[in-house]
Image 1 (tube, rainbow, N blue to C red):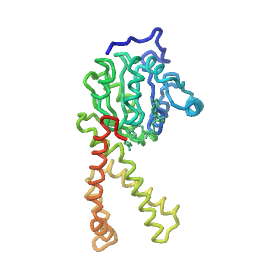
Image 2 (image 1 turned 90 degrees about the vertical axis):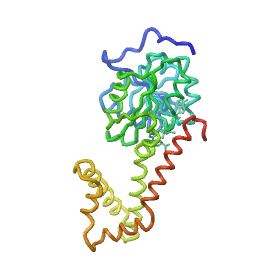
Image 3 (image 1 turned 60 degrees about the vertical axis):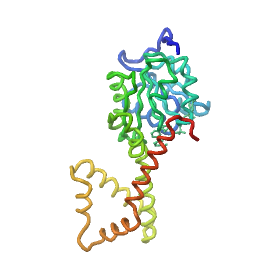
Image 4 (image 1 turned 90 degrees about the horizontal axis):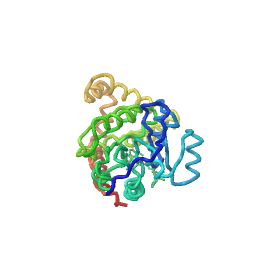
Length: 286
Ligand SMILES: NC(=O)C1=CN([C@@H]2O[C@H](COP(=O)(O)OP(=O)(O)OC[C@H]3O[C@@H](n4cnc5c(N)ncnc54)[C@H](O)[C@@H]3O)[C@@H](O)[C@H]2O)C=CC1
Ligand SMILES: O=C(O)[C@@H]1CCC=N1
């Protein structure tokens, strides 16, 4: 593949060292990242977005003051491209971008399953590519973004990725071989907690509580438990034991969770998510 060069004149960022970042595919995670970058102090003038529908482009301009462009224009102007389309749309997006991405553009994919090798094959040789698996709590600056370098990404490229994603939560570097597992645990992770809250709220209804009270109680229990998990330094088993009084209420609930195979269900669920991530690797899986 021939090596395209950057257009002249380049986009001028508002700060001399500020990279221009483009989000290509501004759905749920793309918009969450965009809003996070703005909250973290990036000027809307240094942020570019692309959207397939005009209505969506107008919405993003109004909401964030960013400039919606075509994918080709964004690829020409940005220093960093964040690809946030579905894995199934990745091949066609890359085909559209390839003639316009120069080898000094950092390409970051947030798509589940899609490997850095797959992206590298579609772009000019030596294009730096990084795979990142964020999660939706980037919306509240409590995201977890798991980062792996492709074969041409440098330490400076990784630092740029950590700069972008670190502004909206934590980051963790892993070998790319662990990305499918991390996608199952962390990328999809928030959904499991929402599912548990939903189910426990239903349990509260069964026990006769109004839905809003049941919801508030479970959400606060979740927040308290999460903060203790993060800050107490205690193992989760110890934290659970501290709640579980002899001949008390909690142990009766735990026995039912074990009887119903909840632990095994969670292990199977995450394995299924990991397998789906692997299936999506080629992007052509519906
Ligand atoms: N939703 C989540 O919690 C997470 C999603 N991801 C990944 O992020 C990606 C997007 O997921 P969602 O935001 O949930 O999906 P979504 O369906 O909300 O967003 C995808 C967006 O990409 C746009 N798009 C598709 N092809 C395009 C193209 N050629 N040019 C410009 N825009 C294009 C669509 O119009 C849509 O707005 C997926 O690859 C997913 O694996 C990663 C981590 C977490
Ligand atoms: O469900 C999905 O495929 C995406 C990737 C991780 C979270 N959401």
